[in-house]
Length: 65
Image 1: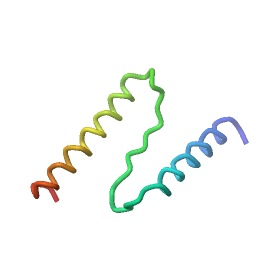
Image 2 (image 1 turned 90 degrees about the vertical axis):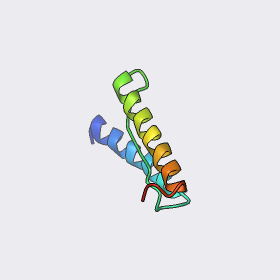
Image 3 (image 1 turned 90 degrees about the horizontal axis):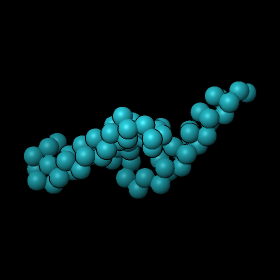
Image 4 (image 1 turned 60 degrees about the vertical axis):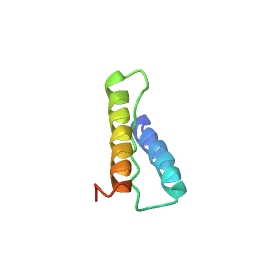
């Protein structure tokens, strides 16, 4: 097993832990592997969070299905 395989196994383990904690499997989880010093990747994560917030609010108003 090389370092790349070990890294992928660790990431999968952490993702599975988050999935197991998801109280509502119908709600999507956005999972990203990133380094906080990579501003492009951090921007992608923030965009995903904003998208989820907007969708949730629109659904609450009956404007998004």
